Length: 77
Image 1 (cartoon, helix red, strand yellow):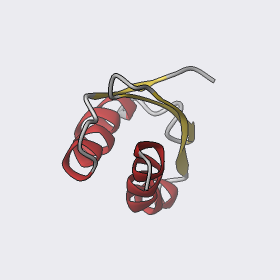
Image 2 (cartoon, helix red, strand yellow):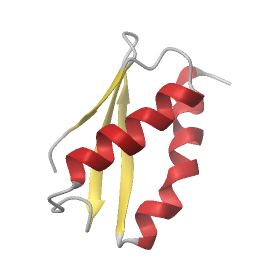
Image 3 (cartoon, helix red, strand yellow):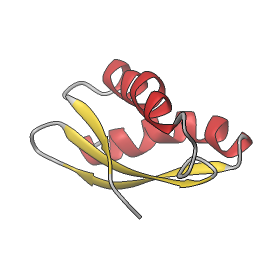
Image 4 (cartoon, helix red, strand yellow):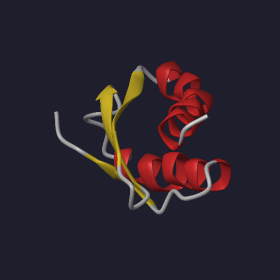
């Protein structure tokens, strides 16, 4: 499996939790430098806790599951 596929699979692990709150996450880009860019959607896009979700939820999970992930950044709509 490629690095991109590993990241997509790991996002699939956490997607149900985001969807349960009316949101979702879209993988935008996986850089060779280990930076993963995502777009939060639905309720997650406008949530005041979205940065916390991104850092403590998404980034932590990706770093634990996919070797080489350095950080996760959110991109705009």
